[in-house]
Image 1: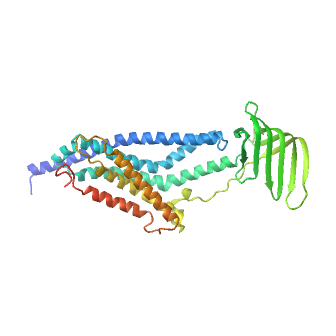
Image 2: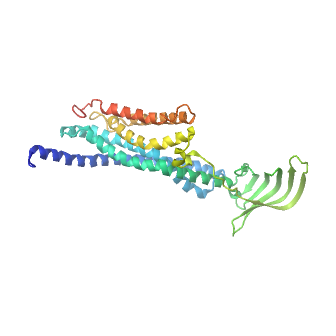
Image 3: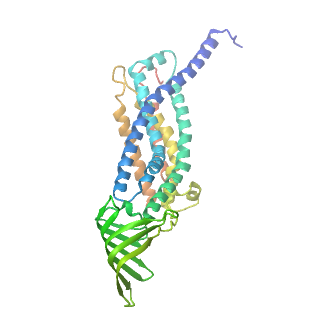
Length: 375
């Protein structure tokens, strides 16, 4: 039995201690660019969402009060994609800097192999993959369900304050269609108002010179008050039509009842697991393989970061972006194939991540340019 004071034992323990410090150092170096990339991507994504939703608000399709919540929901959905790509690019940029600054050569000289680097990256990737799994399996359907409901409520709500003159507005099921030739935002008055309503075989068409909206301060119910016009009541198939002239006519603007509609993106993961529909299986496999992609992409960043000294810290960044774009597009194509029944549940989408894992293994075991580093 070797003594605790044996030089080989001491050297081994120092190497183990150094490995722990090295792991924390590598994780810290990866976290810096990954956090920066994540902030940039989130800012760009949120800006895109704001532009999109604000356009809907201007067109009267969304109330302004729902924008902030919709942006938060859509951002939460996007995180399952943003986290893997930020980790992947963070690995490429951090290790690329270590290569260009010759720190990898120094580590190799101290007896640290690339396996230690891969272990540190893998541990970080597994921790983040657990978070991505929660985002995919739980947060994704919840956020989609909330966003779909907000959209449905906006479509069912009739609010003349959001109307824009010169456009036709229909409620969720098309029961009411409202059109105004012009409007005065200061007074809330509409001119040249057309209202179409069809229910139980009776079609009602109303033309009015002007109209305004009255809101009950207690219940919040809205009523359309129309002035100086004609009311056409048409009984389809019966021939009992009537035309009524009026000086003032009131029409309650009732919101449609929201009927829950099945959509696979908002379906619970347990519900998808019990389904045999190809589109449900594609959605389920997308959620299940996202955490795997987080780990494999992070490990792919190790060989893609290889660079000779003085080549440039971020010389492989463009290659990494192209590699991720190729993976993501192949994954989308595979999802479409499963949805259309061209590919069965097996291999489903799994073959894309298996192929990614094989590429990672082949590139990791490829000879490294820094001599014994990686051998």
